[in-house]
Image (cartoon, rainbow, N blue to C red; front, side, top):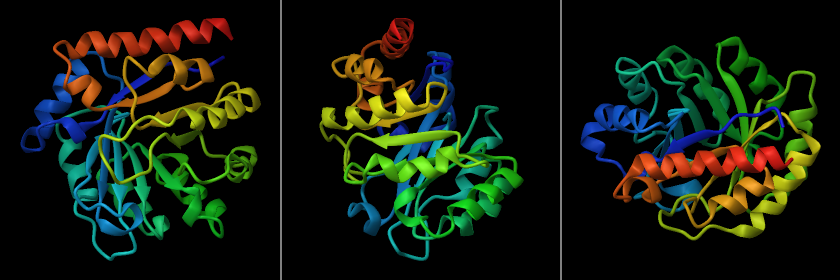
Length: 247
């Protein structure tokens, strides 16, 4: 398949007062990324939901409001404590405004939502790359998968597609298996593309996601709530590897 597993514990379930040590703990357990979602009320409709990505996947959620609860300053602070890949996933109305500050803060990846970037995604991708970050595009459950095709097929393409497997903004939701149709289509069309899934992933759902073709797995409570988080991370990785061998 040409892709490698990336397991990203979601720091939504971590001790937010000790993010640096929690990040190190997850990496010591075998995590490849850390996942961090940050949001205010609007886009997601739930200001209480916040989670931390380390490909570190750091996700900035903001719904049509001028300020972020956590943004570039958190990335800058975390960068002082880790050399991990920091992947920022922004749910904001105008992601192009955040390219420069996140680049300066030390972000490694920058994932934006296709729903708010239909008019300027080409310029956005170019700016992301010019700041030394890796571009990715995300889509919510209700968005047709066809909307990301132009961004992957472009001469200057995104390098990852994030398929949300729950509605963004609410923690503890159940995995939506119907979203795996999107993953299957993507994997068939783009064998070497990084495909990430986020929402409700754990030991009981990983085989469905991995068999569909997902190789980047975000998992929160299933890792942090486990008696042996390292064992869960290992299980998630094993499922991705085994399913890749079948392809």
